[in-house]
Length: 153
Image 1: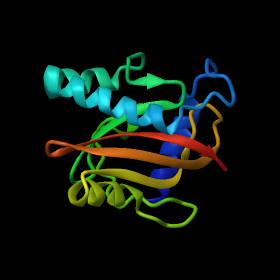
Image 2: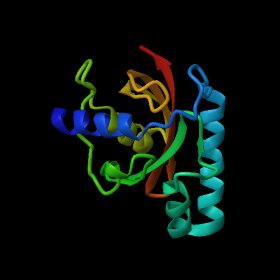
Image 3: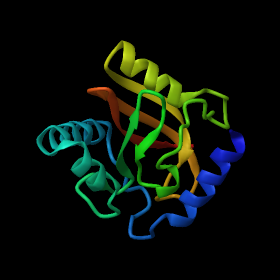
């Protein structure tokens, strides 16, 4: 699993775009708003159209370092800003800093509470560094929608 995370991190850093200004981070309120907007889009348009939109490199569901991701209750990624994540079941993926199985925490939280926040380390597409990330998630039927903010090292 550690090799998977490191490979994903490396690919993510290579894909990062210099169009973002350093320090131009999304806020917690913006992450929550993006998940709410994704929920509304999903309900209005259905999963097929929503997945296509969430996976587009340029869409209403990507803004600076914010992006929506969408997964099932087994931790299988259906939509993500990094195409290498799509189709992978990453329920047991561990934070390389503290060993926390953060995807499992998101799934468990969605099943028990419906929504919440989970902290973990993940590569930031704007800084190309491994940073602390806090992700807001919401249950979306039998799936999960999420968007996270980066908090720095």
